[in-house]
Length: 133
Image 1 (cartoon, rainbow, N blue to C red):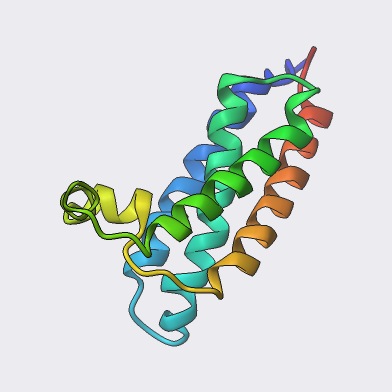
Image 2 (cartoon, helix red, strand yellow):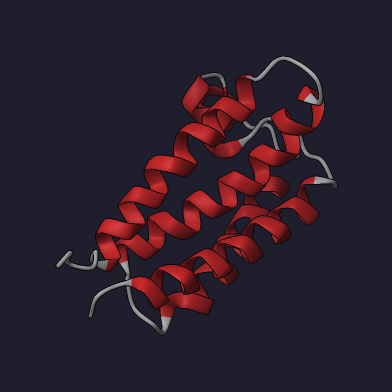
């Protein structure tokens, strides 16, 4: 009989799926690339952070708190894109800095962050439902 996966194993597997999709969404060139590069990446970015934090805090009580905090922090980071001090500009000049902090403020990112956190919340609930205690 097969043993059920642990919550951490399921979360790592989820991250293995979401991370390359998120990175690929930023570099995709083809039909619909304007949406995939900017907005699908936002959704996947939120899901990634929900999963990553859940990997560190795999508690039932965290299922709702994680997506809320991910949304709050991501919205703060979005507003930080309006600020251009030398240190932030230096960080944003690297590919990792661009991926983590972003470079350009856009109001349309906010609905996609909300969608990503909602999907992240559903994903965490699904992981919790199927893990082995």
